[in-house]
Length: 350
Image 1 (cartoon, rainbow, N blue to C red):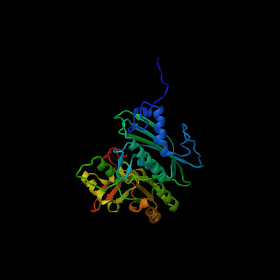
Image 2: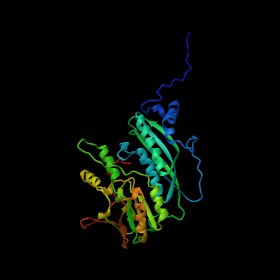
Image 3: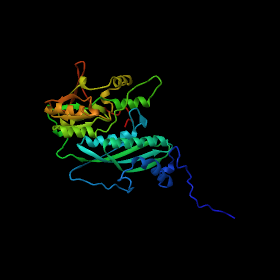
Image 4: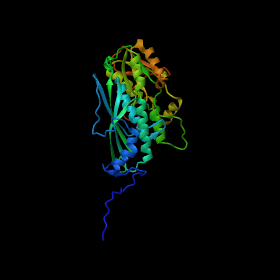
């Protein structure tokens, strides 16, 4: 007599320690990955419906919408991880446009063999950073690719926020006399990731990434201070990329005082050791603000009152010349033109 079993015993252990290709196949293992790993960490009323799209209430006004992808290596580094980076980066892109960040999407591309504990830690970090930023993850997607195709994990996020009324931030509004403020120390993120990736037994460092969501600090600044002209977070291309872009796009001459740029001693030492210019290195928790001269003191007070802006400094100002150049006044009294980096000196840092 032949007996046929109709039980549906999973081929794979649902409590597997690593991601397998079948976790992305849309079947039982996909359900188990969502049920046991992803949804418990990201649960909220909008996401829990599991519809193909999130249905969001919209107020009158303008919406800001942005998207970004994150491929940093390693996935975890001093001061953060790819999850905190994905939420912070998208929130910050909305905030510097004058929007209040509200909702994010989260798409995961997982590599076969990824340690489940790493995935759990990253998702916990996503949720913690979203709570810190005051945003909700409302929709998402998960795919699994074969070994060697994703370096463990890639993340794509998109975000929307409501633009504040009567707030137009643009380089077109920059005028001679406008002041440039930097919210804190430069180059911490890029160099922290670089040192972690290239770790050698003879290198020890307390350097940590500055990755953080800036929406609260920027929102407070916009609430308290009139005369904010333009903002940009200094990510890839670093401070040099932002200030050179501002000068070129406005057509105004911008002078930056090197002695005023805040930098940690350990960051400066790491940059010297690696032969890098700190102005070219990425940040993930700093904003460059252009403000009318008579409002600069108020803007500085507002930034310094927030824990993420305690080392904010006025670093430069726009002059009368209309040459579109950004000039650095060096600490030894010389002058040089700041140019946008030609390429990416530190790949895979965001």
